[in-house]
Length: 72
Image 1 (cartoon, rainbow, N blue to C red):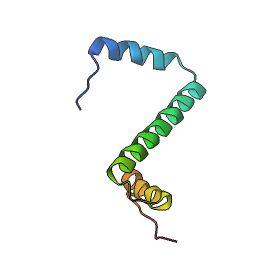
Image 2: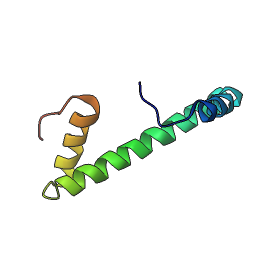
Image 3: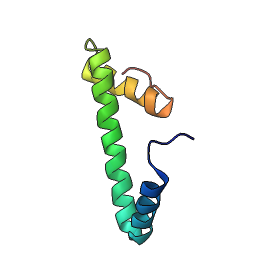
């Protein structure tokens, strides 16, 4: 796997993660997941400005989870 993080920076980052409580790690993971969803939504919106909010949400489900529910 490729990384833009130097080995030294990765070591510091891993040490920070090791010192976090489980609750802090879960909180960080949830924040990162929410950020990813916002970035994916903004990217899709810029590529497909014609989509309604419902269509956009359905497309995002397909991108993120590989499943697009039937339209209501």
